Length: 131
Length: 131
DNA sequence: GCAATTGATGTAATAACATTACATTCATAT
DNA sequence: ATATGAATGTAATGTTATTACATCAATTGC
Ligand SMILES: [Zn+2]
Ligand SMILES: [Zn+2]
Ligand SMILES: [Zn+2]
Ligand SMILES: [Zn+2]
Image (cartoon, rainbow over all chains, first blue to last red; front, top):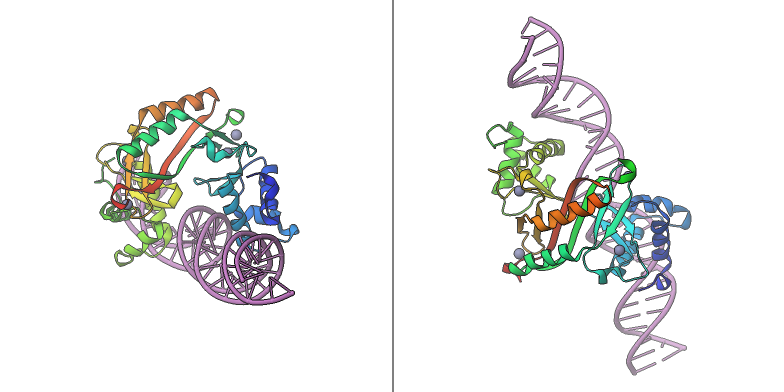
Protein backbone atom coordinates (compact mmCIF):
# COMPACT_ATOMS: atom_id res chain seq x y z
CA UNK A 1 0.00 0.00 0.00
CA UNK A 2 1.39 3.36 -0.94
CA UNK A 3 0.05 6.79 -0.14
CA UNK A 4 -1.11 7.22 -3.76
CA UNK A 5 -4.25 5.16 -3.68
CA UNK A 6 -5.82 6.79 -0.66
CA UNK A 7 -9.28 8.30 -0.82
CA UNK A 8 -9.70 11.99 -0.21
CA UNK A 9 -10.50 11.66 3.49
CA UNK A 10 -7.77 9.11 4.08
CA UNK A 11 -5.28 11.33 2.30
CA UNK A 12 -6.26 14.39 4.33
CA UNK A 13 -5.93 12.55 7.62
CA UNK A 14 -2.62 11.00 6.63
CA UNK A 15 -1.36 14.38 5.54
CA UNK A 16 -2.22 15.99 8.87
CA UNK A 17 -0.54 13.18 10.77
CA UNK A 18 2.60 13.08 8.70
CA UNK A 19 3.08 16.84 8.99
CA UNK A 20 2.58 16.84 12.73
CA UNK A 21 5.65 16.68 14.93
CA UNK A 22 3.83 14.54 17.46
CA UNK A 23 0.90 12.19 17.91
CA UNK A 24 -2.60 13.62 17.54
CA UNK A 25 -5.94 12.62 18.97
CA UNK A 26 -8.78 11.88 16.56
CA UNK A 27 -10.53 15.03 17.70
CA UNK A 28 -7.53 17.27 17.15
CA UNK A 29 -7.22 15.81 13.66
CA UNK A 30 -10.88 16.67 13.18
CA UNK A 31 -10.22 20.26 14.26
CA UNK A 32 -7.36 20.59 11.80
CA UNK A 33 -9.59 19.35 8.99
CA UNK A 34 -12.66 21.54 9.57
CA UNK A 35 -11.54 23.86 6.80
CA UNK A 36 -11.24 20.89 4.48
CA UNK A 37 -14.87 20.02 5.10
CA UNK A 38 -14.66 17.59 7.98
CA UNK A 39 -17.65 17.81 10.27
CA UNK A 40 -17.86 14.65 12.37
CA UNK A 41 -15.53 12.37 14.35
CA UNK A 42 -16.55 9.41 12.28
CA UNK A 43 -14.91 10.89 9.22
CA UNK A 44 -11.63 10.82 11.10
CA UNK A 45 -12.11 7.42 12.71
CA UNK A 46 -13.04 5.80 9.42
CA UNK A 47 -9.98 7.19 7.69
CA UNK A 48 -7.78 6.17 10.62
CA UNK A 49 -9.13 2.61 10.51
CA UNK A 50 -8.02 2.28 6.93
CA UNK A 51 -4.66 3.94 7.50
CA UNK A 52 -4.02 1.58 10.41
CA UNK A 53 -4.98 -1.33 8.20
CA UNK A 54 -2.55 -0.13 5.52
CA UNK A 55 0.23 0.22 8.09
CA UNK A 56 0.61 3.94 7.37
CA UNK A 57 -0.41 5.03 10.83
CA UNK A 58 0.00 3.64 14.34
CA UNK A 59 -2.31 3.95 17.26
CA UNK A 60 -0.74 4.71 20.63
CA UNK A 61 -3.00 2.91 23.06
CA UNK A 62 -1.60 4.46 26.20
CA UNK A 63 -2.35 8.02 25.13
CA UNK A 64 -5.35 7.53 22.81
CA UNK A 65 -3.55 9.12 19.92
CA UNK A 66 -2.34 8.40 16.43
CA UNK A 67 0.98 8.90 14.72
CA UNK A 68 2.19 8.53 11.14
CA UNK A 69 4.45 5.54 10.62
CA UNK A 70 8.12 6.48 10.65
CA UNK A 71 8.75 4.60 7.39
CA UNK A 72 5.51 4.53 5.45
CA UNK A 73 7.28 3.69 2.21
CA UNK A 74 7.99 0.20 3.54
CA UNK A 75 5.23 -1.98 4.85
CA UNK A 76 5.43 -1.46 8.56
CA UNK A 77 3.38 -4.54 9.24
CA UNK A 78 6.15 -6.56 7.63
CA UNK A 79 8.60 -5.44 10.28
CA UNK A 80 6.65 -7.43 12.76
CA UNK A 81 6.21 -5.94 16.15
CA UNK A 82 6.46 -2.18 16.49
CA UNK A 83 7.38 -0.58 19.78
CA UNK A 84 7.38 3.06 20.80
CA UNK A 85 8.93 5.50 23.19
CA UNK A 86 6.65 8.42 23.95
CA UNK A 87 8.00 11.55 25.60
CA UNK A 88 5.45 12.84 28.07
CA UNK A 89 7.01 16.28 28.00
CA UNK A 90 7.33 17.13 24.31
CA UNK A 91 5.23 14.39 22.76
CA UNK A 92 8.02 13.06 20.59
CA UNK A 93 7.47 9.47 19.53
CA UNK A 94 10.16 7.06 18.41
CA UNK A 95 9.28 3.84 16.69
CA UNK A 96 11.52 0.79 16.87
CA UNK A 97 11.60 -2.90 16.07
CA UNK A 98 13.33 -5.53 18.17
CA UNK A 99 13.45 -9.13 17.06
CA UNK A 100 14.62 -10.42 20.41
CA UNK A 101 11.56 -9.01 22.13
CA UNK A 102 9.37 -10.20 19.32
CA UNK A 103 10.71 -13.76 19.52
CA UNK A 104 10.40 -13.74 23.26
CA UNK A 105 6.74 -12.70 23.12
CA UNK A 106 6.05 -15.17 20.35
CA UNK A 107 7.59 -17.91 22.47
CA UNK A 108 5.54 -17.00 25.47
CA UNK A 109 2.35 -17.05 23.44
CA UNK A 110 3.21 -20.30 21.69
CA UNK A 111 3.99 -22.03 24.99
CA UNK A 112 0.51 -21.19 26.21
CA UNK A 113 -1.32 -21.76 22.95
CA UNK A 114 -2.26 -18.11 22.93
CA UNK A 115 -3.04 -16.92 19.41
CA UNK A 116 -1.51 -13.47 19.11
CA UNK A 117 -3.44 -10.68 17.47
CA UNK A 118 -2.12 -7.17 17.94
CA UNK A 119 0.65 -6.47 20.42
CA UNK A 120 1.25 -3.13 22.10
CA UNK A 121 4.62 -2.01 23.45
CA UNK A 122 4.82 1.58 24.61
CA UNK A 123 7.39 3.20 26.87
CA UNK A 124 6.28 6.50 28.35
CA UNK A 125 8.93 8.73 29.82
CA UNK A 126 11.22 11.62 29.03
CA UNK A 127 13.27 11.93 25.87
CA UNK A 128 16.92 13.01 25.76
CA UNK A 129 16.02 16.52 24.66
CA UNK A 130 13.62 17.06 27.55
CA UNK A 131 15.71 15.51 30.34
CA UNK B 1 1.42 -2.53 50.89
CA UNK B 2 -1.06 -5.19 51.88
CA UNK B 3 -4.77 -5.24 51.36
CA UNK B 4 -5.35 -4.56 55.09
CA UNK B 5 -4.66 -0.86 55.17
CA UNK B 6 -7.00 0.12 52.39
CA UNK B 7 -9.69 2.70 52.93
CA UNK B 8 -13.30 1.70 52.56
CA UNK B 9 -13.60 2.78 48.92
CA UNK B 10 -10.25 1.30 47.98
CA UNK B 11 -11.21 -1.97 49.66
CA UNK B 12 -14.54 -2.14 47.88
CA UNK B 13 -12.99 -1.53 44.48
CA UNK B 14 -10.21 -4.02 45.08
CA UNK B 15 -12.74 -6.57 46.25
CA UNK B 16 -14.82 -6.21 43.09
CA UNK B 17 -11.75 -6.54 40.89
CA UNK B 18 -10.28 -9.50 42.71
CA UNK B 19 -13.56 -11.39 42.55
CA UNK B 20 -14.07 -10.70 38.88
CA UNK B 21 -12.92 -13.32 36.43
CA UNK B 22 -11.88 -10.68 33.93
CA UNK B 23 -10.87 -7.04 33.64
CA UNK B 24 -13.50 -4.41 34.36
CA UNK B 25 -13.98 -0.85 33.19
CA UNK B 26 -14.20 1.90 35.78
CA UNK B 27 -17.88 2.34 34.96
CA UNK B 28 -18.72 -1.32 35.38
CA UNK B 29 -16.98 -1.24 38.75
CA UNK B 30 -19.15 1.75 39.58
CA UNK B 31 -22.28 -0.18 38.65
CA UNK B 32 -21.27 -3.08 40.87
CA UNK B 33 -20.77 -0.72 43.79
CA UNK B 34 -24.00 1.29 43.58
CA UNK B 35 -25.49 -0.81 46.36
CA UNK B 36 -22.46 -0.08 48.49
CA UNK B 37 -23.10 3.63 48.15
CA UNK B 38 -21.01 4.58 45.15
CA UNK B 39 -22.54 7.38 43.15
CA UNK B 40 -19.90 8.92 40.90
CA UNK B 41 -17.08 7.78 38.60
CA UNK B 42 -14.57 9.76 40.58
CA UNK B 43 -15.04 7.48 43.58
CA UNK B 44 -13.88 4.60 41.41
CA UNK B 45 -11.08 6.47 39.68
CA UNK B 46 -9.68 7.75 42.96
CA UNK B 47 -9.63 4.29 44.49
CA UNK B 48 -8.09 2.86 41.33
CA UNK B 49 -5.34 5.49 41.37
CA UNK B 50 -4.32 4.38 44.83
CA UNK B 51 -4.57 0.69 44.05
CA UNK B 52 -2.41 1.20 40.98
CA UNK B 53 0.08 3.09 43.10
CA UNK B 54 0.14 0.22 45.61
CA UNK B 55 0.66 -2.30 42.82
CA UNK B 56 -2.54 -4.16 43.71
CA UNK B 57 -4.21 -3.43 40.40
CA UNK B 58 -3.06 -3.05 36.81
CA UNK B 59 -4.49 -0.88 34.11
CA UNK B 60 -4.85 -2.43 30.67
CA UNK B 61 -4.30 0.49 28.35
CA UNK B 62 -5.44 -1.20 25.19
CA UNK B 63 -8.91 -1.99 26.52
CA UNK B 64 -9.45 0.82 29.05
CA UNK B 65 -9.94 -1.64 31.86
CA UNK B 66 -8.51 -2.67 35.18
CA UNK B 67 -7.54 -6.01 36.61
CA UNK B 68 -6.44 -7.19 40.06
CA UNK B 69 -2.79 -8.12 40.23
CA UNK B 70 -2.20 -11.85 39.92
CA UNK B 71 0.03 -11.87 43.02
CA UNK B 72 -1.01 -8.98 45.22
CA UNK B 73 0.74 -10.48 48.25
CA UNK B 74 4.09 -9.68 46.67
CA UNK B 75 4.91 -6.22 45.50
CA UNK B 76 4.20 -6.38 41.81
CA UNK B 77 6.17 -3.24 41.13
CA UNK B 78 9.23 -5.07 42.41
CA UNK B 79 8.92 -7.61 39.61
CA UNK B 80 9.80 -4.90 37.20
CA UNK B 81 7.99 -4.87 33.94
CA UNK B 82 4.61 -6.55 33.79
CA UNK B 83 3.23 -7.85 30.51
CA UNK B 84 -0.21 -9.22 29.71
CA UNK B 85 -2.04 -11.47 27.34
CA UNK B 86 -5.67 -10.49 26.92
CA UNK B 87 -8.17 -12.86 25.34
CA UNK B 88 -10.54 -10.87 23.17
CA UNK B 89 -13.09 -13.67 23.29
CA UNK B 90 -13.44 -14.51 26.98
CA UNK B 91 -11.60 -11.59 28.54
CA UNK B 92 -9.11 -13.75 30.40
CA UNK B 93 -5.94 -11.90 31.32
CA UNK B 94 -2.60 -13.48 32.08
CA UNK B 95 0.16 -11.51 33.69
CA UNK B 96 3.81 -12.33 33.14
CA UNK B 97 7.29 -11.01 33.73
CA UNK B 98 10.20 -11.44 31.36
CA UNK B 99 13.64 -10.21 32.25
CA UNK B 100 15.00 -10.59 28.75
CA UNK B 101 12.37 -8.24 27.38
CA UNK B 102 12.86 -5.91 30.28
CA UNK B 103 16.62 -5.73 29.78
CA UNK B 104 16.17 -5.24 26.09
CA UNK B 105 13.81 -2.30 26.58
CA UNK B 106 16.04 -0.84 29.26
CA UNK B 107 18.98 -1.08 26.87
CA UNK B 108 17.10 0.62 24.10
CA UNK B 109 16.07 3.46 26.39
CA UNK B 110 19.56 3.86 27.87
CA UNK B 111 21.16 4.00 24.42
CA UNK B 112 18.94 6.93 23.55
CA UNK B 113 19.02 8.66 26.92
CA UNK B 114 15.32 8.08 27.22
CA UNK B 115 14.22 8.12 30.85
CA UNK B 116 11.67 5.35 31.22
CA UNK B 117 8.49 5.95 33.16
CA UNK B 118 5.75 3.38 32.79
CA UNK B 119 5.96 0.69 30.14
CA UNK B 120 2.99 -1.08 28.60
CA UNK B 121 3.16 -4.53 27.03
CA UNK B 122 -0.15 -6.06 26.05
CA UNK B 123 -0.84 -8.93 23.67
CA UNK B 124 -4.42 -9.13 22.49
CA UNK B 125 -5.57 -12.36 20.90
CA UNK B 126 -7.26 -15.64 21.66
CA UNK B 127 -6.48 -17.82 24.65
CA UNK B 128 -6.03 -21.59 24.50
CA UNK B 129 -9.53 -22.22 25.86
CA UNK B 130 -11.19 -20.07 23.20
CA UNK B 131 -9.18 -21.23 20.19
C1' DG C 1 -27.05 0.59 -20.82
C1' DC C 2 -28.60 -0.96 -16.22
C1' DA C 3 -29.38 -3.41 -11.87
C1' DA C 4 -26.61 -5.29 -8.17
C1' DT C 5 -22.91 -5.04 -5.23
C1' DT C 6 -19.38 -2.99 -2.62
C1' DG C 7 -16.79 0.67 -0.53
C1' DA C 8 -16.73 5.37 0.90
C1' DT C 9 -19.06 9.43 2.72
C1' DG C 10 -22.25 12.79 5.45
C1' DT C 11 -24.72 13.69 9.60
C1' DA C 12 -26.86 13.25 13.98
C1' DA C 13 -27.23 11.12 18.11
C1' DT C 14 -25.49 8.52 21.72
C1' DA C 15 -22.32 5.77 24.41
C1' DA C 16 -18.09 5.09 26.95
C1' DC C 17 -14.22 6.85 29.38
C1' DA C 18 -12.05 10.40 32.36
C1' DT C 19 -11.18 14.93 34.75
C1' DT C 20 -12.07 19.54 37.01
C1' DA C 21 -13.96 22.07 40.69
C1' DC C 22 -15.55 22.70 45.07
C1' DA C 23 -17.35 21.50 49.54
C1' DT C 24 -17.00 18.36 53.36
C1' DT C 25 -15.33 14.77 56.43
C1' DC C 26 -11.85 11.96 58.68
C1' DA C 27 -7.37 10.67 60.76
C1' DT C 28 -3.73 12.02 63.27
C1' DA C 29 -0.01 14.79 64.90
C1' DT C 30 1.26 18.76 67.52
C1' DA D 1 -8.24 21.99 70.27
C1' DT D 2 -6.52 22.84 66.25
C1' DA D 3 -3.85 22.41 62.29
C1' DT D 4 -2.58 19.42 58.60
C1' DG D 5 -3.06 16.22 54.95
C1' DA D 6 -5.72 12.39 53.06
C1' DA D 7 -9.99 10.73 51.66
C1' DT D 8 -14.73 11.43 50.32
C1' DG D 9 -19.30 13.23 48.12
C1' DT D 10 -21.36 15.42 44.32
C1' DA D 11 -22.14 17.93 40.15
C1' DA D 12 -20.65 19.39 36.02
C1' DT D 13 -17.88 19.05 32.23
C1' DG D 14 -14.49 17.33 28.98
C1' DT D 15 -12.64 13.73 25.94
C1' DT D 16 -12.77 9.60 23.18
C1' DA D 17 -15.38 6.34 20.32
C1' DT D 18 -19.48 4.01 18.29
C1' DT D 19 -24.27 3.19 16.43
C1' DA D 20 -27.69 4.17 13.12
C1' DC D 21 -29.26 5.59 8.92
C1' DA D 22 -29.19 7.95 4.53
C1' DT D 23 -26.55 8.97 0.40
C1' DC D 24 -23.02 8.77 -3.11
C1' DA D 25 -19.43 6.65 -6.15
C1' DA D 26 -16.94 2.97 -8.42
C1' DT D 27 -17.17 -1.77 -10.10
C1' DT D 28 -19.15 -5.93 -11.77
C1' DG D 29 -22.26 -8.89 -14.25
C1' DC D 30 -25.90 -9.12 -17.32
ZN1 LIG E 1 5.69 2.09 11.47
ZN1 LIG F 1 10.74 15.22 24.94
ZN1 LIG G 1 0.82 -7.84 39.09
ZN1 LIG H 1 -10.39 -16.85 25.95
